[in-house]
Image (cartoon, rainbow, N blue to C red; front, side):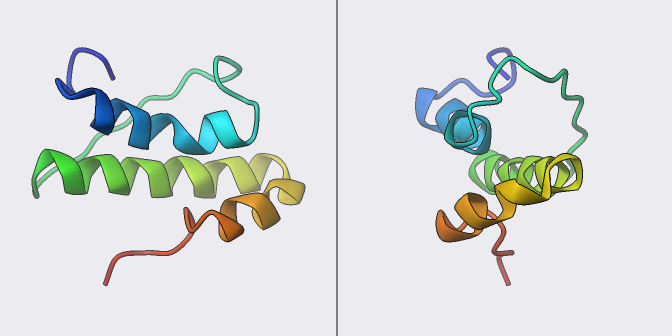
Length: 74
């Protein structure tokens, strides 16, 4: 993340679901993104991480949904 996203705000966006669910550093995450700008890619990664987290632990759905991380951009 640090190598790809030069701006701290984008790195923060990507890590938000992990920080919210207290799982930062618990998983190794590999991501491929194509197209769009880096801001859109950061949002897409946040969405994907959020969806992956709820497949591991369904109880995380509530906090992630409340934070808006499960809402897809139109």
